[in-house]
Image (cartoon, rainbow, N blue to C red; front, side, top):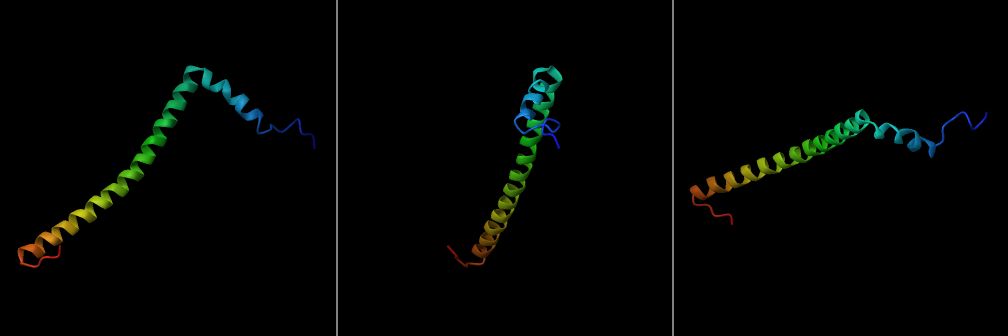
Length: 73
C-alpha cells in the first residue's frame, strides 16, 4: 500500500488552514468556540448550584437548631 494515498497527520492542518481563511470558516470556528464555552459553563454552573444548595441546607439547619437553643458553632 502506498503512503501517498493516505493523508498524514502533518498534512491535515495544512488542509484545514484554508477553511479558516474564509468568512464562513471563521464563523464556524467562532460558533464552535462559543459552544465549548457554553458546555464548560453548564458543567461549572451545575457544580456551583449543588454547592449553593448544600450550603443553604446546612445554614438553614444550623438556623433551626439555634432557634431551639442548640448551639453547634
